[in-house]
Length: 166
Image (cartoon, rainbow, N blue to C red; front, top):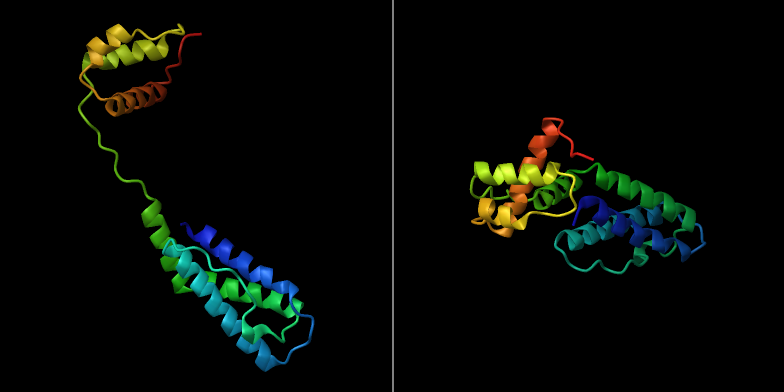
């Protein structure tokens, strides 16, 4: 799960808490509430990072006496502090590592005959594919290898500024 999604899910859970109280609170209550919210955010991110279901958000008991405006402000502060933390950096690094696609195997080299057939098919103006010639030229390739070969030849043609005939 990427970091933005995990953080957004945790933020939504915290934001859902803002409709529960309208009473004023003292600074001790606010500090305890902020600490509880930070812990709840960390638990939510950890759950998403481990591919666990996102825990249902609820107003931490320490926030029971905190008014909605203060709770909203604390949500922003806790989130900003977490995003600026080393933990957020680690979660982002881990998410990038897991999102990086594995190297695509290159498979066999593209034979000259196969390359020529792919180029002809890409550049001709017909709506059909000469599968017989393709099977002859590229028949020893798997579907995945043929797809990779077509992509490679297409990239080469684009680099050469070749365009298909109308």
